[in-house]
Length: 133
Image (cartoon, rainbow, N blue to C red; front, side):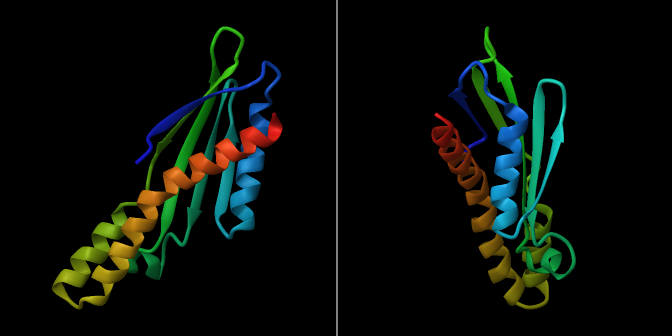
């Protein structure tokens, strides 16, 4: 599972615009994506199916990507991933273990999807970076 990645970018790379492109891509796929812009970095919160019945079933997906420019000339993009939605998976497995087996199955499906989400976001970010070159 990827926790962070780094990529070389041009000196005139627009981090805020890049974050908006990533958010737009995930919004088009049915995710809720919010961008918080700060002075030298951005945070992109991507989530889908969190809350409600999905808390019991463990099917929600969520991740926060924190991106910043570093290097002598701000030519290095560094992205780290955090805040995955693991609570719902634990709830689903516990409920499924004690009450009925169905939430265990959906919880395992949610775990597999959550484990793949950081890598999917990383791949999409790298694809968008390659399009800009």
